Image: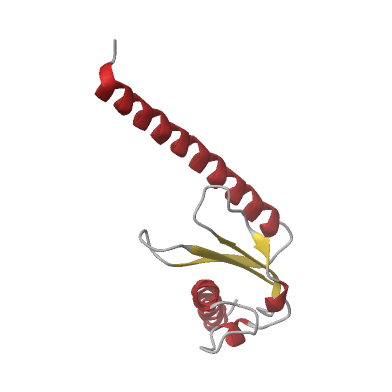
Length: 141
């Protein structure tokens, strides 16, 4: 027989395996949704706020060619059952407004920080694209 400690060890191992399986399913749902958002968009970025000891918040921004937000979603929660949810307050804003330290009404500080992280990535993408266009013009392209 397993004994008292063997049963406890087995129970902990099963709970750990269940946690891994549910985390994998959540990751697959997240990436599938990101792929859906990317279709027909100019650029997409994901930002993160929080750490392993506090609740994490993921913010996803989808922008058009003018770097205006066409779709925004966030995922927050303590469990593996958290999903991306739409954030209509950000639709129509420029990434410059999102980089402003003052959050939009209805958006929490941690979520705002995640969206700012995504906007910063998009800003660097925009600057890189501008530099490559300038280099092409200098070469006579």
